[in-house]
Length: 349
Image (cartoon, rainbow, N blue to C red; front, top):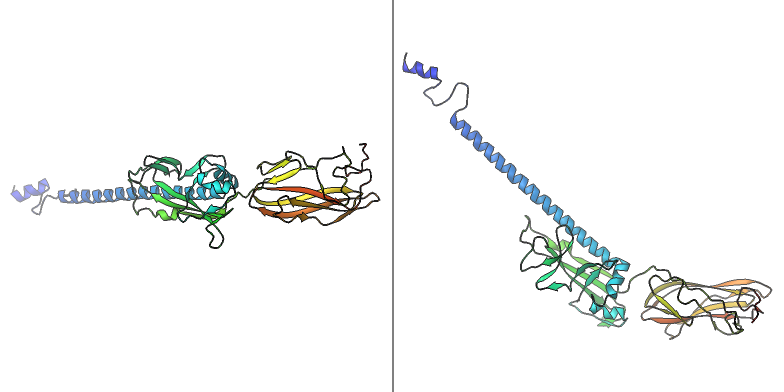
């Protein structure tokens, strides 16, 4: 048998190491290389996908942090706790005392409290080089350090408040308040694409005092023990006797002593009603004992002497910048004739 015939029977040709029913060694090597390239590409793709997902989660968490801080600043109860805490915010003494706040271009550090009194964030916190910050879940952390970045506490704020006074005034009582928070980012693991940290900045303006919706309820006390009581208001402004303390005052905004009402600084929507019986023309007024505010007087109503009753009403809104004491007084055109309690009942003195 010739050499050529033997080679053909063994499956070889002169052109190389090709089998009749398989791949050549070179082809196998090429296929393996292609598979390796595809695997490497898939690995890189998955790594990028995971990194992008991690970055998206982180940015979503930081967006929630920003939104939560904004809501806390705007929340009535939270702001009331924030301004009232002398230990956490000593710089807010002017707000607590209703004294002029000095304008400061550098601002004042702010410790922001939640409505339940928990600390939302504190610019005052500093232990060594460690500051308040937030982790990737949006939870407050205590290890933010730009000099030694901590991946578990990468976001922080330069959080400050600024008094805003009318015109060019350098100080004023009860100013508007601007709260600015410059977002800061420090992490040893900077994600691909970097971090546009300025998108998490805060800038909001609110009133210095808390805007409250707490109802205050104060009622009259029947004065039937003396003929000089509030029922005997003919021809003179006579003080109405009031309950002390108020029946309802969840915000502790008003105190009552000797029937005088002392309101904390703020803006009040006020409705006052006073009944009268057989007293002719009747008016009531709310009078500031310091005479800073003009007396607020109701329209005249008529309680007919033949046996009629009437209700004098004041609906008003007023703003006071310091704690102010008011007195509620009533004026009657005629005597209510043996009706010292104003309701028609004849009482023995």
